[in-house]
Length: 382
Image: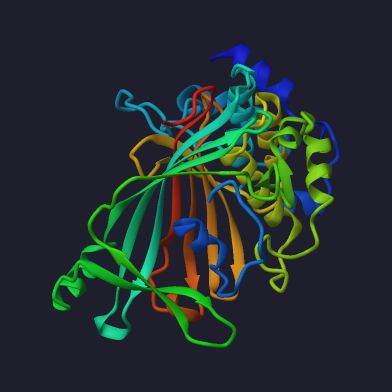
């Protein structure tokens, strides 16, 4: 067993997860793809800019669980080859997964540069047609962005439509029955006032790469963290989990991050906002580690175990459930524990209720974003 890692995990544990501390009963009990995520509750979101776009064991058992399981799964894999007769690996609970990710994040180099550079593949899942003739298509887009960290810097973005295709074999069969069209008239889950749902054409074939340059929207406030923030503010976030949590909660008003008329529980809101901090923003390694530790203390977060992201890379997923007007959906964060970095964020439909997705199968993806690169750079695209 790696005792140095276990000691590091124990030392990294925030005070609220101390096994000797009293735990109250409640605690123990408890943009294409961007546009889709922003409008999944079927209403128009407030105008502001984005950068892009459960726990099984109690606190007292975290260290014990890690002692049993960390050797098999701490690097991101949930299973391993073993001789016949050996005991199967113990699945890590969400607290242990997140504390391990915090350990990985804290070991990363603390550097900055002139531009924060990210590359991602975003997939949105859209309804085409209705009834027996309807089907779902998955549309993929590769995005690349350079966010300035220098005075007078410009925001650069590069985007390419990678193509669209029916999401499942059943959808492909319905598509063929409709003559295999090369352009899909997709239905977006958003209305203009009380009018009909929006439609948008999506081509099956890939498109050309487009590169644009512009001044950052809202001056230098280019990231969303419960409110619009600058790169400077992101870099100055607290490295203590409790202080980071308090800093974020100053902007919590009891509702969804996208819709003031949709209530959202505090910890659900914190998971959503903090996931964005981890996936999109140029936070310092100590801040990313604090974010993982803070998530380890939230209610309702659970581990999904070892998974692969949409690009086939192995990781471990944690998730929380959100109750929306269209039904229950799961927000997933796929993590590379060793590096303390996000591989993918996903929204999955768990229990359809209303709207154009009412007939979708439980477990259907709504959006996925896979992060291929997140780093500081000096040169800009040419």
